[in-house]
Length: 239
Ligand code: HEC
Image (cartoon, rainbow, N blue to C red; front, side):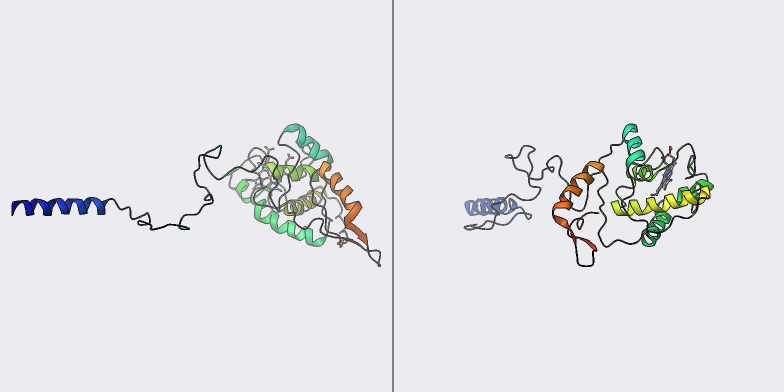
């Protein structure tokens, strides 16, 4: 009788041990697992074979993400001066581009710079931010290139707009900012340019633009019967 009692307890403990070891998060015992487990590395999995111990790797240096183009001017005083002097707006000055620019300006910039670009936005009026210049500030003498540059990197109290806006949008805003500057200075309104059928080359750097033009001359700009230029797949993927 006693030994039966002991046996029962032993059996119970054994059963408990076996059952208690099962991890609910793991699959149960697999009989002939074959293809249950993937052979390939799991995304973000940890594996010793990789240098950093995990499957996820940083892109190779110099990688350019799709739909994005590098901006060659660096965030320093010298490059800012170069951009200011040499970088020009690749977008034609059309009504559409200006209107787009106005909308974006109103969303992103007017809180500080004001609707007229005189540096009297709502945040300035409420004294939440100081030192917002007017676009006709003679000491700054902003240019298309400097406006683009400052939007790309920001400047002191002004943040960067590189992540919120695309290349095209930044150039549209630049058109609008320059038109505000003209208004503030009392210059005559700039005349609109014709919309061109060729897609605009949005490479922001001089070096890239040259490279691009070379390629374009060889194979992607064609004249059709009307003498109208049609550029094919040149700039499809850029933003
Ligand atoms: C949070 C407020 C704020 C917002 C929003 C803002 N700015 Fe500014 N911006 C400033 C301040 C402050 C300065 C002066 C920076 C300095 O010189 O220290 C400035 C300077 C500038 C300058 C002059 C730069 C130069 O060359 O001296 C330009 C051009 C400019 N902003 C354009 C823009 C545009 C375009 C936008 C919208 C995409 C924008 N800003 C949004 C606060 C702002």
